[in-house]
Length: 550
Image 1: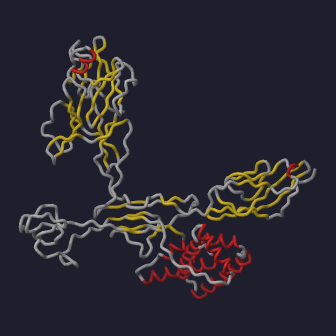
Image 2: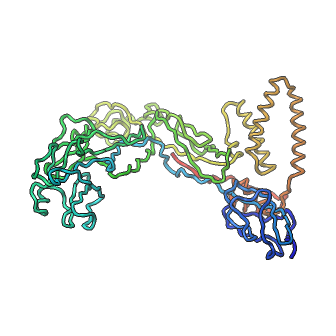
């Protein structure tokens, strides 16, 4: 027996491991069979990994790009213990994944007018004559007519076929519609169902469909989705065999039939001046709401959040959204925040302008509906004016407003790319932005990363410097102090920096600069390998990115 015999020196690296990859690393110990235990005693050990049976196993959890872990492992035998430090690099180069789908953004209102018959709260009002009284009968709702093997005899069901409601009863293993004629034919009874507000006399009906919502009578819960309230609102309903007198627009009427379990749900249309069958859904849970419209009216308010998923993002970090130059524009009046929220009131869109170029076709509106004349000669309906037919030389009313479609590309990127996109119309502000951008670019050129850090530091140094000048500090001496501190800091960083020499190291830096894109990192590393450290690599700008359109 002996102490654990490590076969590598302290500081040994287990290399680069991709996040979520399966890890199975046997500890480098020559007398492994004698080791009784091994565990991490200090340092940072990647989350998701553990040491079991002298082997590092598991799946490293998400990390931000490339994260280096240093830790110490203690192994023990019967004769004692021995420690060794290790390094492991977990690479997490996931790029943000769009949740908001590409294409037309659904930024408009959610249409109202969706109806739902809530079967969980509706009281159906079907009563069965038992002994000397009518007793409430349970009613099950079905999507279709029940199969013969479903339910038990004397069960009652309700279904809807093309907005027509039907009650069914099961007798002799068959389901039949609850009408007096059908029930008398198949069940050998008379006056089997009575539909009324008043209680039938004893012995006159087997079933009573009690109308009116008192004493367990028919009380349907028809609800309408209200987009403004974002809620389902119960509607007032009129239940009667006769059509309501002087109905209001959208008034709901359930038309019942005498001595029958068939009914119709209707809505009054003021435009058509009649009741029409109501288009509704039914069930015990609310149906999916209508999706927001993929268009917006001018002068409307928009508040829409673009969404991406990036599991690498840590607390305090945020994505930055922007529309780069020549990548389109939002509708006038809207703006995109760095956090990805589109907000604002859409500016009114002008109608056709008689003075615009090319403007109106001033010829008589004659043969084609696309002509732009202000009067017509033959009664055509103009595509460019309102929808009224024009009657032989009668001047038009108003030209139509034309729909506009705006297409734009939204980018999500790191600090230096965001900095490049900042430009102000004010020259003084733009000068300050250019200074910050230069700081970010120099950091990218010298270090390959850290652009966001340099941007934040530059702003902080500027703000603190201005505060010092306001409090009486000499600007020249302040600048000298900054230069001295900068040289000291750079010298210290140079002492602890590690030269990038190996191809894997070049690939890692290139991948970071490429926003975690492994394929680009591999290409740059290969190019560096081919031309050498002093070679020249030419990079041309591309235009491929995630995009959304409005």
